[in-house]
Amino acid sequence: MHQKSPIMKIQNIDFGSRPLFLAPMEDVTDIAFRLICKEFGADLVYSEFVSADALVREVSRTKQKLAVLEKERPVAIQIYGRDVETMEEAAKIVEQSNPDILDINFGCPVKKIASKGAGAGLLRDIPKMLAITKAVVESVKIPVTVKTRLGWDENSKIISALALQLQDCGIAALAIHGRTRSQMYTGTADWTLIGEVKNNPAIKIPIIGNGDVTSAERAKECFDTYNVDAVMIGRGAIGCPWIFSEIKQGLFPEQKFFVPTNDEKKVILKNYILKCVEYLADERKGIIHARRHIAATPLFKGISHFRETKIAMLRAITVNELFGLIDEVKI
Image (cartoon, rainbow, N blue to C red; front, side, top):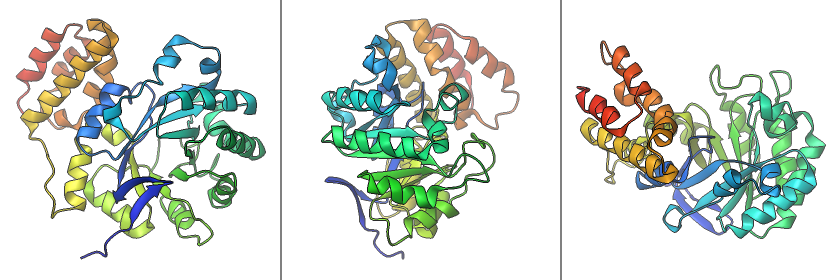
C-alpha cells in the first residue's frame, strides 16, 4: 500500500491527491473536448495556445479561445508570445475572461512559433523568458504557471537551474515536458530531470510532469518514482478522453470510476463530433475539426483490414456518413 499522497494545490486551488491534467494542445483542447475530459476526471484542463500578439490586435478567432464555462473549472488559459509588453497586455486581457490560472507557453516546439522566439524559442533567450514571466506575474492577480521543456537541445538541458529562476519570478507551478525542443515529439520523454527538479529541496512550487503517459501503470510510476505533484496528459488524450478515468481507476483501485466499454466509447466519440459541429455551427467544418481525434483514437487500433474504413472516415463530410462508418466497426 503506498503512503497517502499529499494534496496538490496551486495557490488556493485544491486538486486533491495525484491529479491528472489535460495538456494544452492547438486544435485539440477546445471547449467541447475539455468538457468531455472533465467528465472523465481531468482535474485541470487548459485552453488551446493563445497568441498574445493576436489577442492584443483583437483577432476574433483568438478572442474566442478565451471563452470558459463554469462547469469546466478549474481551467487554465495558456498564452505565448515573444515580447514583454505584449505578453503583459495579453495577460491582462486573459484575466478579464476569468480563468482560474494563466499559463505561459515556453515549450511549443513548432517551427513557426519557436523560430520567431516564442514558445520553446525562449529556451535560447533565458533573460527574456524570465523578464516575460516576471512581468506577467506582476500584471495579474490570478496564479501564473509556466510550461516548458528540458532545454533547447541535448547539449543545453538547463531545466534544473531554470526551474529555480522561474520560481524566483513568482510562478505558482511549473509543468515540464521531458523532451528538448530539438526532439519535438520524437524519442521518449526523459523523466529523470523532471524528478531532479521536483526533488530539489529549494523547489517550493508544485512540479507537473508531462510526456508519454498513456497508461495507469506509467502514471503510477511517474508519481512513485519522480514524486511529481501532478501528471499532465497530452497526445494520449487525443481521441481518447476516457484515458483519465482509466488511469484514475488504476491509481485509486478502491474507488469506482466510469470506465466505458468499447460501444460506449463509440458513443462518446460521436457525441464529441456532434459538439464540434454545434460549436462551429457548420457540419463540414465540425467534422474536419474532429478528424484528428478519429485518426488518433486507440479505439480502432489493431482491427484487421481497417485501413479502407479509416480512409473513408477521414474523408466523410456528413455526420450520417461518418456515424454509419463508426457503427459498422466491430470491436
